Image (cartoon, helix red, strand yellow):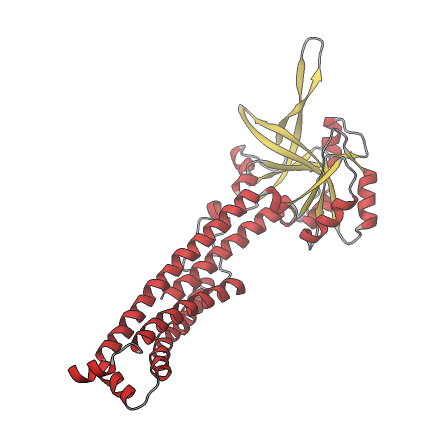
Length: 365
């Protein structure tokens, strides 16, 4: 039962890790280039990357913190200006949201939470207040621009759905008065981001930096990894407790068979033969438990994954179905840990069986 619980628990933990990783991967992009100084990323930087790494996908962007205004409601957000033809192949969330839709100048696509809170319908106007300001004769007035609502996306994580918004590069460039060939950064899609980040970093100019999606969410994944390791150790203790039953049952067997063991010694049996007898008995008990636990665990994973037994709130967990994914590494760790505990549990009683005093046992029993 301990092995079964451990297998199912690790599958659920891995499933949630992969689910959150997929969501964060989509909204954060594998790699992102940004400017470390006041100097912006320009078209020449983009062309150099395309020339040296033609197998990657690139989407330049301009971003700005904004305040959304609809009626008397004010909320903060983050607006991205992108080229949708380059962005959609890299962002599955936007791709699903913008099927057969064309986004024009001063059109906007928002997260589902923003849509719901502002009661937006297709064609409605949403006012955005930018952090940049226009000077007047006596004061500075924040830039304001009305955008036309064209649709919404749903990432599955409310942290993004209530903040992120997308419009065209031309729109945000006009509002913020960016020159034609400058950007705030470049989103990069790579199938091997851990290797490509090292290669790209070597050829970047000193004013540009690059960051991977795993670095942008390091604390989150560190917490998940710590939780997974803690759960593995705690559940492994269940197997350790179960192994005490093996030790106790074998010790009771040794105690009840003292006379037979002494008789075997007197007939010429070696300590190795006696030790192996009880050791193999413990291995049969523990090995049978491991095999039964593996079978029950895999059956449980199949049943939980194939049938809608457990339903989750999608707005909390990002998915309504229980995610299950048992990695080979975790499976092997469970097997190795279980076998080690069973071997140790079988060895001690078999060792004690060889310490019986033959003469005293035969004389008294």
